[in-house]
Amino acid sequence: MTTSPEGAELVTASPEETEAAAARLAGHLGRGDLLLLVGELGAGKTTFVRGLARGMGLEADVMSPTFQLVRVYPGPLQLAHVDLYRLSNTAELADLGLEELLEEGVVAVEWGDRLQGCPGVRVRLQTLDPDRRQLRLEGAPATWSW
Image 1 (spheres, one colour):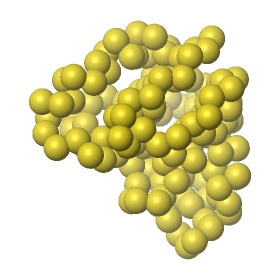
Image 2 (tube, helix red, strand yellow):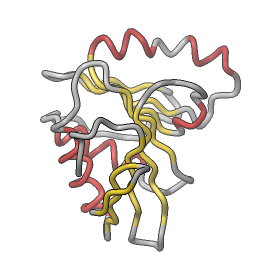
Image 3 (tube, one colour):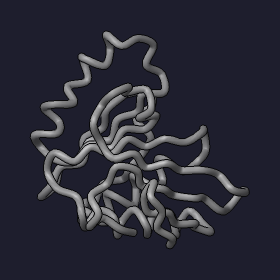
Image 4 (cartoon, helix red, strand yellow):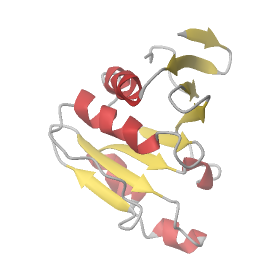
């Protein structure tokens, strides 16, 4: 892992390593934390959320919420998994109930760059090659790490 002014960076060499990094990050999360996941199609956003769930101690079978928009995984600390890929207008964003979800736990938003001006920690996932991903935290507290 390397640290830069933009945030903590890590390169993973497999989906399992991406999940493990997210699981470690989950140990820093608490009620009201919003993670905005940014990356191209296939970058590993759902894989990342699967690792978050595991790190939060959830027994959930995490799947992409593309057609549901929101999947909620209950536990000691609830995880809401939001996918904005198919969202066509900003009016639909208000219907998601992000504020209520944040009151109940952690919210991870795929395609989080569509939430312009929304305060949250950005997790950038960049595809380096078919197996490797660069993960970067932006706007995270200094105590957060992989």
